[in-house]
Amino acid sequence: MTITLTAFERSPDGGKGLARDTRVRWALEEVGQPYEVRLVSFRALKEPAHLALHPFGQIPTYEEDGLALFETGAIVLHIAGRHAGLLPHDAHARARAIAWMFAAVNTVEPPILELVTAKIFEADQPWARERLPLVADRVRGRLKPLAARLGAADWLDGAFSAGDLMMVSVLLRLKASGILDESPNLAAYVARGEARPAYRRAFDAQLAVNTGKPPAR
Ligand SMILES: N[C@@H](CCC(=O)N[C@@H](CS)C(=O)NCC(=O)O)C(=O)O
Image 1 (spheres, helix red, strand yellow):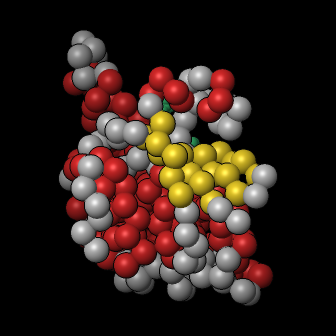
Image 2 (tube, helix red, strand yellow):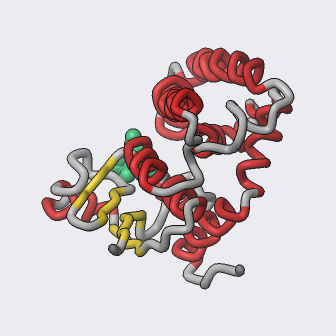
């Protein structure tokens, strides 16, 4: 059974690990599953062959044994359901970990993406300066309760889970904004995620694509 992901031929972030294939690579590294990557250009994303895999013409996609999936939340949940290491055995703890996955993509990620849009794509609009603080405050409105819930714990609900993998992946986009550092426990949480050997392998693999150099380790 070969697992094949798609990723950007050249990521707009130049290899900072913010493209969403990184979270899928990370999940596969955590559970010890090898995978292959098919690189796609921006043009190919919107062509019929890729649209057959991903209706919105995006990366990543996931193919395995006749199954084709899109949406990182669904892909990581699929991986976590099939292989040990990302979801607890206890049924309640498992359900809570899945709730954190949804919280990451459905509650925390949207205002972060809005901030990225405001900073990058709307920066030249006449209303951009006024809007940016509002959007930044919406992000803070999500981080504050998240930081309160995490408290002094290492992970959101006991041992590291797919919920943490998704939440850390989503929060990583905030590093450059300085907003993450306003919640030192969340900044430390993200750093703990980044320090995991599986994350390092995933990060290095996507970096190698973008630099053209083989992974350092
Ligand atoms: N909700 C989707 C978002 C996928 C997404 O936005 N992918 C970006 C790269 S990180 C993309 O392909 N952008 C190119 C485009 O939308 O044309 C997921 O989590 O998989």
